[in-house]
Image (cartoon, rainbow over all chains, first blue to last red; front, side, top):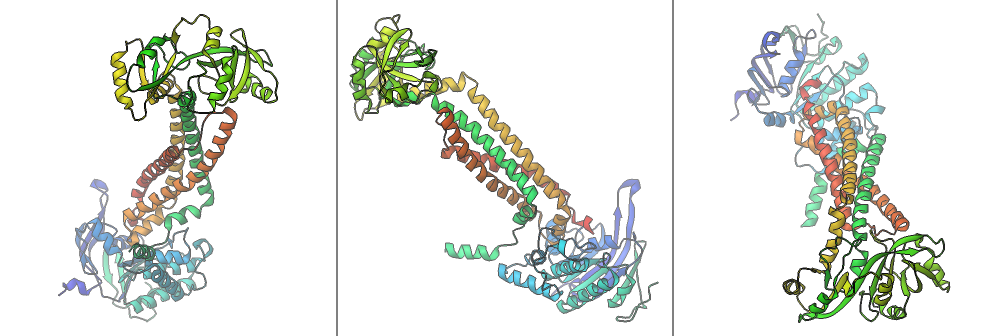
Amino acid sequence: MSPPSAARAIAIEGLSHWYGTGSTRRQVLQGVDLQVAPGEVVLLTGPSGCGKTTLLTLVGALRQVQEGSVAVLGQQLNGAGRGSRQRLRRSIGMIFQGHNLLRCLSAEQNVQMGADLLPGLGYRARRDQAREWLRAVGLGDELHKLPHDLSGGQKQRVAIARALAARPRLLLADEPTAALDSRTGREVVELLQRLAREQECAVLMVTHDPRILDIADRLVRMEDGRLQEDPSHRPGAAAVYA
Amino acid sequence: MLRRWFTGLWRARRIPLAWLLLTRQPVRLAVALAGISFAGILMFMQLGFRDGLFDASVTIHRLFDADLVLISPRSTSSVSMAGFPRRRLVQAMADPAVEGITPVHWNLLLWRNPETRGTRSVLALGFEPGDPLFTDPGLAPKAQLLTQKGRVLFDQQSRPEFGPVARWFRQGRTVDSEIAGKRVRVAGLVSLGTSFGADGNLLTSSETFLELMPNTPPGSIEVGLIRLRPGADAAAAVERLRAQLPDDVTVLTKQGFINFEQDYWRTSTSIGFIFTLGAAMGFVVGCVIVYQVLYSDVSDHLPEYATLMAMGYRLPDLLGVVAREGLLLASFGYLPAYAAGQGLYALVRSATQLPVSMDPSRSTTVFLMILVMCMASAGLAMRRLADADPAEIF
């Protein structure tokens, strides 16, 4: 019934990407292939500037695909228009390096901005969901605080709640622990992994943080715009960061 | 049905982002509202003055008991009325639709302030005391006082520069003064109202008027009032009279007479232009302030808007947020402007006796202008949203 790519959360084949034009044209991705199964947690590592973030924005339907095939949640993004990419983004949760919360909204309202994207739910239902998600990330007592009054770890947890409130089937995270101390970072990522598992939501996370690699089902390393699988990685085992 | 629609709307409501964006920055909101209110007050004042002055130019015109009015084609306005033969008015009586006529003398004369002895120009109307002049029935008994020579009825709403005539008269004093160097006595008070061309008014009999103005050619009047039979067609009567009477007289309806006066002030003076320009300046100032506020608001929140787009909100959703901000600013900026406008109009009325008031058409106009101002500024500020590229926030 569904095409083969629908079985995968992400199916990338031969993806190449360039920045700039003419003599300043620079290739950042070279023939990338990557498959992510539903519910799988994949960590993407590599030195800075190797194209990890570019790959994330392409999968997140935030950028036009130039060459190759990118199917996300069964939808081909090569040649997809603005409107269809925007609709697809509703099924993709995103967590950023900074928390990117709306400063003028309370924690609860921020999470509800995510829940508001769900069709057919009444205001009350959406608000209750937002509260539940905040309780799930352990912020049940901070519902009405503004981001300004929350700590870094709390803000990142609000961001996770916001991303999950839209019930995504794919979660993209770009160094979610970058702004956090190691213990808080670890807590946040574990929370993220547990909640994504419960939702059967696939996760593609870019990280530099060697302490969190063990939460991954699979580890992928990127160098100079090419991907290398890390076969030594075993889920749950303490990884040695090369 | 309607109830279900409302419940549906209530269920579908979302986080009021526009409202929160504005209210969580109280200083910026206060600046915006102050700017909008200021622009609104400026527009209210300028348009109020303009309309008030145009209105004030016809305070007397409105009072006349007439359906049609004859004037000389050489008359340009109430401050320069030319004479025409009184015979024309009598000829008009021949028309079957005409019920009655009143010849009126009209001129600006020099009135001597009985207290300070200084002189000032006053609008004097002369008529036969038995003839109806104004629609106000209270005039007829007072008019009988004018049958005695050298008596005048003084307008108690005249500016105070004419002297404490009304006060003295009410105290029972005999108020004597001079008009054009001739002695007159105030026989009573009437209430007419000042106008643009005249700071004060007085009524007198034709006989006294001619005595004050001995150079008036015999049989010449400045205004001829014509009353039609009930149910008569005014427009048809105007047509007939225009055809019958020679062209040394102009036939107008009462409204035409009012328009004639207002057109003079509108087109032959710079009043209309000046006050419209003043209102336009308020509009521009308001635009600049609202644009500044909304533009910096959008700029400050650009990463947040980009985040919303990354989450799957559409650009029109975000444009809607900015538009709602504009709408909220317009509504909340208008209320203080309206209140202040009411207060200032009251102040102007008491200080100048100009008939300035908050009429619905002007308050609607100002609201629409504020709305256009805010929405245009919001529209310009929205262009900044195009810079919100969700791909840049990673």
